[in-house]
Image (cartoon, rainbow, N blue to C red; front, side, top):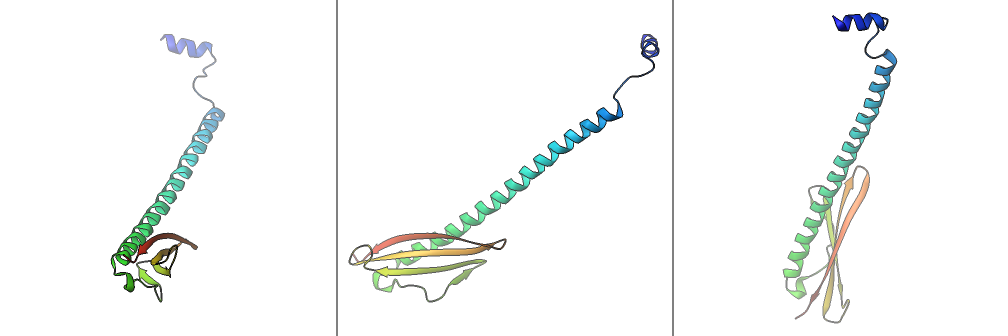
Length: 128
């Protein structure tokens, strides 16, 4: 009974006004949109990291296979090879950086939402 008496003394008004509710909902909405935007950025960053890791793994695999070949069999690729949506090519430069060595460079390229991305790895193979 005390509460109803207090309400009558206050003119029957208690709680939040419509304006306060609208402002609170607006602030909450802005905060939720910011969090959603960060989520999208995080997902895109993770996808880019994943494709870069996969491309680098393909390059390392191809490089290891080339380095394992006998010295005379290590030659440049004539055309890119496809590994899923990755394109792999390599060049072999004789006498670089020293005589009796071959510099092997692997380039893995892929299309990421219209942007061509690539990773390049290199190693030197000696004759002996």
